[in-house]
Amino acid sequence: MKRCFGFVLCCTFFLSLWLAAMDESASRSLSDKVLRLHVIAASDSETDQQQKLLVRDAVLETLTPVMTDCGSLQEAEAAVEALLPELQTAAEEALRQSGSTDAVRLSLSDETYPLRNYTFFSLPGGRYRSLRIRIGPAAGHNWWCVVFPPLCMAAAEEDAEEAMAYLEEPERQLITADGRILRFRVLDWWKKLQSRR
Image (cartoon, rainbow, N blue to C red; front, side, top):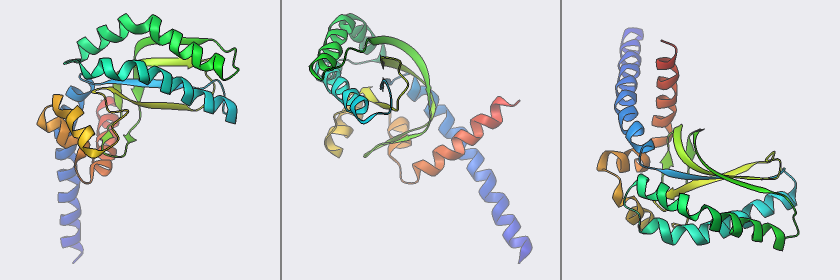
């Protein structure tokens, strides 16, 4: 009985490693196709957290229709780059209307994110291209989502599926499959193991 249990445990372990290696490939290609939005509040006060959401909404109102017309990460990045002054103004106006005098800093950069579970999909941890918005000292909790494909405002699963049509089948499978959270945790473990070599 102990041998049987050990064999099953060993097979499960190696199957998990094999799946992690397969998922790593899809995860890498996914991070080359996704643009994320990262909004960092000035502090954790209730007012600053509310203002973070106001900034998010103002930026998404301008950004979402433009992202819908993009066909690649490069197009999305170019569109964001062109919109930066308008996005800056929208963010500042949202803050001023709420009574804040904090500065807002927007930048496009590469950022490392942890595993994140959304309503209709999940994203594995990793390095992603991001539109980063820092409010004031940017010392509060943050908010993030995916602006390309435009998944931030996906109100229903059908909306999310339509937005994800630009991704290849292995990538869509990776982020929507049952058991994806466990698979992503194994993938995180696999990446840490790989980085120690």
